[in-house]
Amino acid sequence: MPHHTPLIATIVAGLVLAFAFGMVAQRLRLSPLFGYLVAGVCVGPFTPGFVADAALAHELSEIGVILLMFGVGLHFSLGDLLSVRKIAIPGAIVQITIATGLGMLLAWVLGWTVGAGLIFGICLSVASTVVLLRALEERRLLETMRGRIAIGWLIVEDLVTVLVLVMLPAVSGLLGGKVEEGVAGDTASILGALGWTLAKVTLFIVLMFAVGRRVIPWALERTAAVGSRELFTLAILAISLGVAYMSSALFDVSFALGAFLAGVVLNESKLSHEAANDSLPMRDAFAVLFFVSVGMLFDPMILIEQPVAVLATFLIITVGKSLGALFIVRAFGHPLQTSLTIATALAQIGEFSFILAALGVSLGLLSEDGRNLILASALLSIIVNPMLFVALDRWTARRDAEKNAAKAAKAAEVQAETDRAAAAADDDFLPDRALIPARDHIILIGFGRVGSRVGKALHERDIPLVLIEADRDDCVAARGLGIPCILGNAVAPQVLADANLSTALVLLVAIPQTLEAGPIIRQAREVNPALAILARAHSDDEVAYLLKAGADATIMGESEIARSMCDSVESLIRLAPRLHESGRADDPPLPEPNSPQAA
Image 1 (cartoon, rainbow, N blue to C red):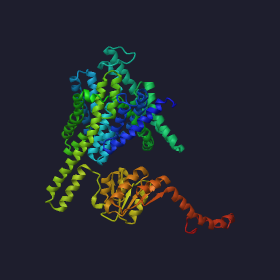
Image 2 (cartoon, one colour):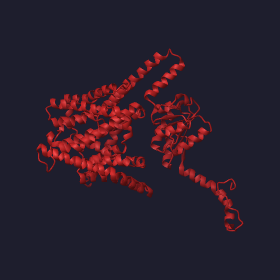
Image 3 (tube, one colour):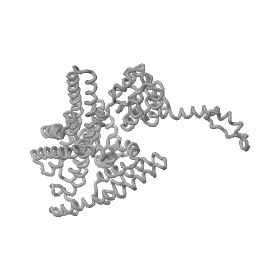
Image 4 (tube, rainbow, N blue to C red):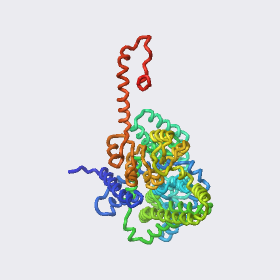
């Protein structure tokens, strides 16, 4: 008889189904987030079959919210926001106002209260970070002006949502929801509670930036000095979860704000990049459980019982707020292509909407029907958003083709100069195609500790070379040395095509991420079967995986160290008699094993 283990059953069912449906969503070129939500629907109480423990799923989702908000804070960049502040701040605020107003109008038509309409509208105004970043990264737009505006816009939306999460419990009574425990229901008492909440939040923020910004990075640096990766990862989790819990226990501040500020403070540390990488697997796992728990709350019958309300909610997200964003960006004088990109990127909702909707339901402000409308429209928007981007890509391609045809009559030199100027106006970090070798060259993937040494050595020998690097700073450094560099992820087929893969002689994969290297090698082998491929590995299993993917040979660090040590043994053996006789004052110093004298 198996033990009654609802916690294990909930985690296993959630993760297994999330993986299965996430893979299906990926195959359909949808965000995996859609698959995670569908997995939650399958184990929820509204569908037949296994039903996960809702209470345990809620507890796990709270951890997911904490780690999700910690990740948002860890990647929060004030510099990115300030670089586009003139459009991102007013644009996001106006767009949130438009979407909230449309949501409140629909709520009024449905007969809801003002408080329910306000929460409903704000939920519809906040785009998903996961969906937006994936769409921009696939199209290599993160480093363009369009990408920077979209990210800055998203940062403002996130900050507004965090503020709402903090303020909502205090003003819930004024909006017709539950009143905080120990607070009278009159307006004066509620406003007093709001003032006390603001005072506690302010005190917590001051302490975090006055004390936390010194203590947290100091503790992380001391942990890193120990040299234990397990302790370093544990320190990151302890900081994120500990600060979030402390903020709730001592200051009555939400878990979300505490985790967000912990990430912001840690972002100032020189170890923030390592902290983000080491905590990513745990953050991803609990984020998946969060989305599964959200899916469990969705009743699919809402699609049949209230199709008009679902359609209206969906149109607010994909049409209403997107048109608002389009007109705002155009009003600030940006090109139509930039305006359409921002509008398309914001035509969806996700994780922050779910967090806010859950808080609204817990405070009695939002009904279950309201949450179901939000979840249904979120699923539909996540499905449709990639299609909108495909339509935008096709429109952009047609527009570019028309422009190229119109300019064909001009002189070649004038045409080339015009193209470079047009590209620099928007995609200001695309490589100069004239510098990329046309054929018989080497393609190097990665310019880190290993790739930079290889790239410099090949460049010094005047070997035709093109580099593909996902990190902007590394790409800038390579170009400073005169090495042609394409900024982007080599997993994307277009990035490899830009490096003239079909006519290359050799592919060197110097990135340490073996799971990412496999798909790169397979794509390269399909495009250029005669290509010689050499890849970097860290273990025998990785060697086997890369060779199976299509690599001709691999280099493993441990094997090369062992070979070098064996090569040095002969020199040491020849020195052995002199080592035994050493100690006499007139003996000359022994040469180093790798020196010319020893050789």
